[in-house]
Length: 107
Length: 118
Image 1 (cartoon, each protein chain N blue to C red):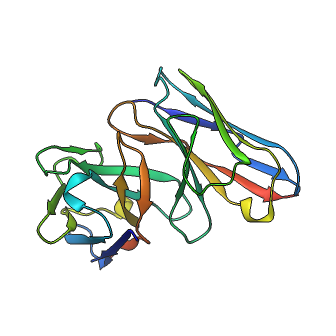
Image 2: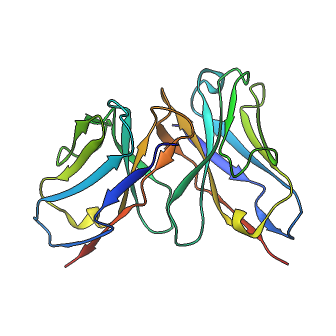
């Protein structure tokens, strides 16, 4: 199974900050990676697929990069609506696996 | 507008069974693979099972192999998850999710909670 490791697990930041979240895969997954945002009590929402493709309707302050085993989600200027938990997910092979999540908190 | 509405969750004793349903609308259901993903209280997301658009291909996480069965009725636009021999560790919110292509999810339902406890 491919293990997905996110860091940090918690991140404290202020509105307007540039935020980066890292996701590492235990083996190469090419660019078969998605990023999701989840708010408390709600279903996840996709932000990025295929490592760097922005889903329709998602603000352009979100971007994704990387390939192989290391991936980054960047929020260029953190907005109040962005305080949430973020998950990466590999879909290179079954079983599909998610990272442990990164909670972005208000500093 | 795409909608996924789960039902069938609830409280069940260890060793019991539940069948979850997910009613889909707003897209051509039979054209898309579907999955179940769960989230234990205070924990992260865990993929449970996936099924192809035709229903001819299925995959399961080890945690559910031999106990869970995913199926779909394309005439009713409905996805199912039959869960048998339930354990305390199956306690979670269970989401159905639509794959656009390749195994990532562009739409999720609101989730249905499953609690396994005596």
